[in-house]
Each structure stands twice: as structure tokens, then as C-alpha cells.
Image (tube, rainbow over all chains, first blue to last red; front, side, top):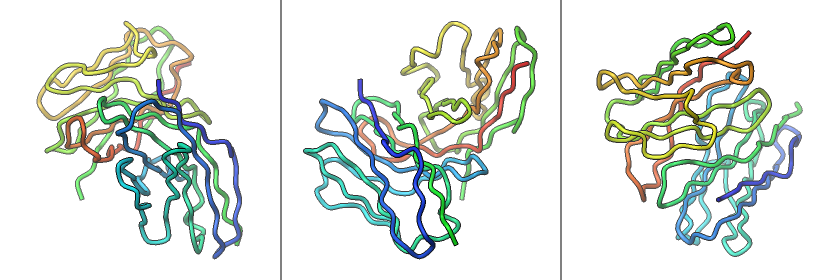
Length: 114
Length: 116
């Protein structure tokens, strides 16, 4: 079974600075998808960014980008120019090409300091 | 933008009681899911549902749990006899694509279930 590991339970960053959240996963599959979700205090689950495993190019969405290292099974999230509204719990998630469930990591709580 | 809606936002029930959590997925979506998140812990997959039947379920989804799409719009999760450890946030999600799609799950805002 696939597992997703987020080794940083908590991270903090100064407003306007850059922070990187780590995620590693374990799989024997070659085709899969990776996601980062944000969960603010409102408890919503909001998609931040996604990456297809077959794409070598790292996904980017405005201030959010990933460093996808397929051989190392690593999928880190970089947040540039951090804003107070970025404070939230961030979950890394893995979705197999062949089944429907999405596996989440334990989450990283990000604090943004003004 | 269409949203997944869940009701109620908070449900309190006594141990041993049955509870039904309701969800209205986005209308053109084909796959539906339930996840739960025990306070402070990771989001855990419970079940996926497609074409009016369960397509996959986790080991958490035992005989106490059932899902139903009674009327083509609602998607419900029933817990027959709640236990204290069922207290959690329950998220409904949906997506439009079948297997092999990279479409992300669209989550509802969750129902907080408290079992006393």
C-alpha cells in the first residue's frame, strides 16, 4: 500500500519569506498523481497544486511550486512571498492511477509570522 | 463555482445511536468519497462510490458504515451504532473523472461529528 510521509509536523516562516514543506511517499507504481491540499482553520480542504508523475516539469501555481523528484519519491512544496493567509495545515496526497482513494500525509502546520 | 455541500456542519449524538451525514456532490461529478479526520490527525479514506455502488473501501469502513445515493443528488454516510471513537470531522468529496484522471477531489466543508 502506498504511504505518504510528512516529516515536519510544524513549520514557521516570516511574512514575505520562502518556506519549503517536505513530503515523501512510497509506491511501486509508475503512474500516479500527487497533490498538496491546504486546510485553514475553517477546516475546508483546498487544492493548492497537483503534479502528474509522468511529467518531468515541476508544477507551479503563482506563489506555489513543487520540487518533484520521482526517483527519490519526494514531492516538496515551496511557498514564496509567504502571506498571513497561507497559515494553515498542509497535506500532501497521493492518488494512484488505478484506484480511487487518495492517501494523505499526516500534515504540516504552517505558521506565518508578521 | 459549484461546490460540494455537507449538512449538518456539526452533529452531536449519543453513543449507540444511528447518524446520517449528508452530502450534495457537484452535479456533473461521477465519483464520490467519504473521508474522516480525527482531531489533529491525518485525513483518512473511508469509501469511494461510483455508478451506485461502492468501488473501494478502507479497513475503517466496517459493517457499521454504509453509503447511499438515494435520489441522484444526495450522497449519505450512515453510521449504525456510533462509538466514541467515531468522533471526527467527516469530509465528502467528488470528482468528475474516472480512473486514470488527474482531476483533484473537491471537498465539502465537512461535518463535525461528536459522539458523547
